Length: 153
Image 1: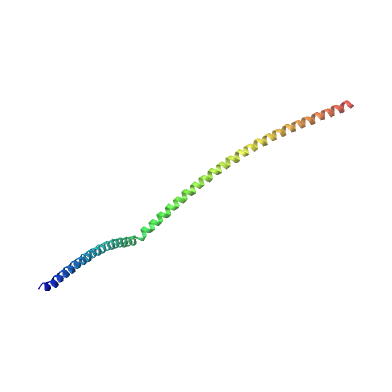
Image 2: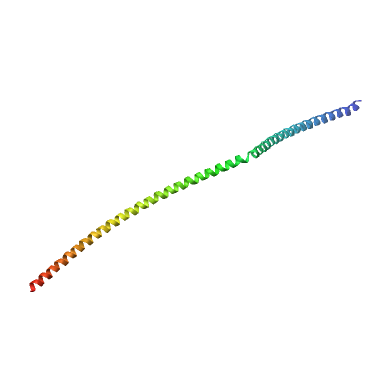
């Protein structure tokens, strides 16, 4: 009888061990399943965010396509007008700078011309003095020759 109960005890131990192994494997599978569920939930959340962004982008595109052509033309015209104003301002600044440079050059030329006039006036005065001296010298010689001619007679 003692001999017959031994296999039953061994069988019970063996079954208890199998139950423990099965429980451990079940816990491991449950943990793995929970981990997979967490990953699936995270991936679903990412997919939801991506869908939301995609939906928003589609909405933005639809709104952009609904903008009337007139408004786009008005924006383009406003940009062209701003560009024209900027170019006109640049042209005005360039014209003012050119005008300033021309005035400076004109003033410089006027100063040079004034110096030349002074120089010419001084030369003319010297020439007049030289002419007067030459005339006086010629008259004096004429008188001397006339006097010499008179005294020879």
